[in-house]
Length: 214
Image (cartoon, rainbow, N blue to C red; front, side):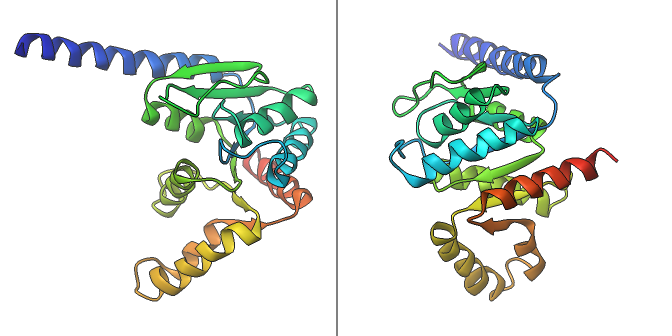
């Protein structure tokens, strides 16, 4: 029994290495890309779904590849907009017991079993993050990026929170609780931008691309 368990752990290590190798290989020539996060539960009737389609279209027309989690909801909207604009539409699909069904708008689908290998692909290959309204997964990706920026573990990149009415309560809480109790610095609130303006999002990302290529 112990030997079998050790064997399972060894094979798990090889599966993890395989996921890293597959992701790095398939995304090595991706070019400037933007990751768009958001709820899998928002349908095409949601204004945020529609905003995401429009945003992804505009970014694709400005030669950004679009990366999503590959599933339904906001992820589908991101891939859909990129696909409709003739752009590169990447889906980093994850095996889940529910919610995650691959959307049909991916031009480059990649399958993952482990969340942490998938997260590495988002960070490594993204020039910026756009975070639409979402649940635990979206919050996880958002704070992962902010933690890496705060600690200097990744190069500076835009993290854009789209939807003031959704995000403002969280921003207020960060100020009233974390800053008030000296748990983060006031400057940490400059690590992200909050907006309702699609044009502003596109312009922020275009300007960052220019700076990063100088």
